[in-house]
Amino acid sequence: MTDYAIIYDATTGTQIGNYMGPDGTTAIQTLPPGAIYMLVPVDLWVTPVSIPAVQAHVCTQIDAGADAVASSLITLSPRRVQTAIAIKEECDTYVAGTSTDAKFPFLSALATANGTTLAQEQTTFLTEYAALVPPGALINATAEAAKRKVSAATNLAAIAQASQINWPAVMATLTPASKTTV
View 1 (cartoon, one colour):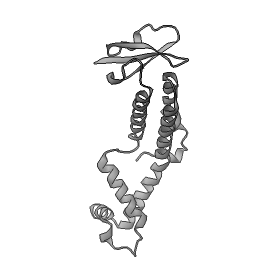
View 2 (spheres, one colour):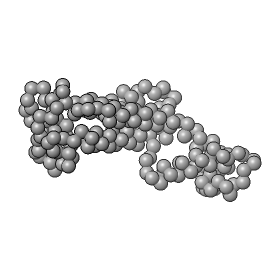
View 3 (cartoon, helix red, strand yellow):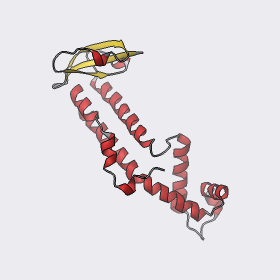
View 4 (spheres, one colour):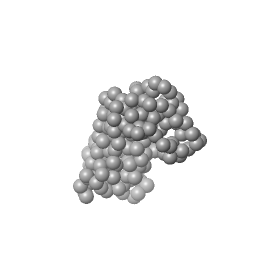
């Protein structure tokens, strides 16, 4: 593989040049005083660099970082996400003793598989869901705020600064009760 890097002034964010070399070699290059680099895909390795293209690339990286943090709490497979949405919708409308089971296929299937009632499955799901809301909301809000800052940035240095998220520090702001892993 190959490193593709944009070299820029760390203060002004102005592009100074580009570097291409074997993986990992960008980090060991001697840069001009005050210069720093940003690794980019080959299609962004141009002069002059396209700020909107770099912003879009960095926003994609922010989302990937948020997904990595979220994956330590939940499984992000499309099936699991879609199923959770369907179960949440069923839980929001199910009323024990007054709802017919046929209108709640996911809760009914869970109850059958686990030998429980729909009300028990509703309680179990809503308890797990409630435990994930604070960290999920925090992860999403942090990523979205960073992406907005990146989108507002006008140069490479500002983009790099705006994209920095210290995920362990962010997650440490959660109260102990909201750190449950499900």
